[in-house]
Length: 386
Length: 178
Image (cartoon, rainbow over all chains, first blue to last red):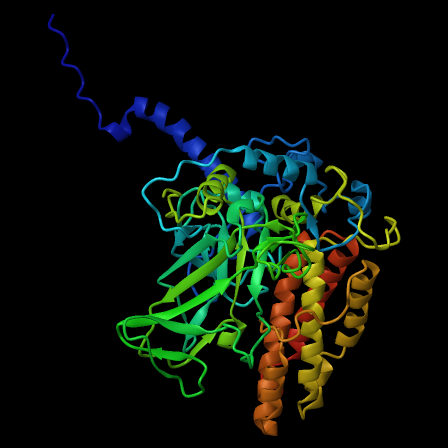
């Protein structure tokens, strides 16, 4: 008897073998999506951004600050040790042994910080090659990521409490962002990829419509006499520059201005004098600069500014702010030039310009750049190379 | 929910006993029962709601229609409670957001602009701004009710959220436009 003709193979999707593979895969996928969505939903149930651009959720991690990703500190994140407010009413007070002496101040781990600084200076700087410009500098080159009405520094945990912000860098920044959640989210609109930091500014609006910057370069440099003592900021360090409450120009014009960059520069002013009008070969630019000296003890302060300050008259970090950190500035370019009608910031007038920086660089990438470029007084690109 | 609440904690846990103690800074050392332990969200919430309420009361007083001022009649009592919570934690109870232009929070500049309007237009504007203020208060209170750490602040956030909802209902459409 001849062999029966083998039954024609059924189409892929209707084979039993496919089902045996597909079902577990689909179940696993669904489960991981469900878990991710559950985290996202609990952190951010209602995406609602004034600018109508994507609202970003974050899976927040209940760990403490200052923890290296390898979790080397004794207090390395053990989620179960973190007191949870949903416990019984008296739980928060009893779950901690003592409240901090000064609320609003977030301290570094001083032992870890000292050890990190020792290890930093023990790193041998890379030999300078390529004849770089002798200016201590590296940068992160960024595009706008998203907008929302959150501010994880000024209004942590309070969704929608802020004026609209334009976020650069970390794609997950929102009211619930922490150093851990920023570090864990590897997606960023900045180069290099090792920079998970969150950078933000008030959204610029033209006739009520958001105008995203065409690009933002974050410069890390030094204005000190001796850049050789500059150390990296620790993980979780954050600060604000500028004054969101200031709606008026200052008599001595302290550099709190937008200007025109590029050929042709400024050709005039808006009728109220507040904004420059640029030649069509130029565009609107804004620079904001953060202080370059730090108290060495706090990741944050109640006003998010008091833990940092300017260098002294001798170009050194001393007194209350003895630790030199990179001088951070944002140079922000906007796709605006000849038409400057109806421009304002979400925080008010142009004089309310301010900027926020929440550090989440991979520590090694940051340390290398500070050591090789800033300490040696030479200019590097965003790749950290000469 | 658990994840969201756990988020607020790391902002302040850094300074607690599970880390080597940072050198104590001069200042009262509150006992656990005597003083509130306010986390970052708790502080942010109170420091935001206080100037929001202050601005709303000033704004409502500018209106001709007394029904508008009546909508925020409970704000002064709220202010007293919120200020007391900040003081108990050793924090300034003043207006840290003075001048900030945030949703539902009205700066001097904005209040002056409203005052400059003629009465019918002014009342309509006050009603609109109060609506924004109440809506924002509801939204922010909902967030704080979930993630605030101090039980008193959390309970307050729940209460104020409910108050905002009923105040919004009292701010009937058309109120202030006649």
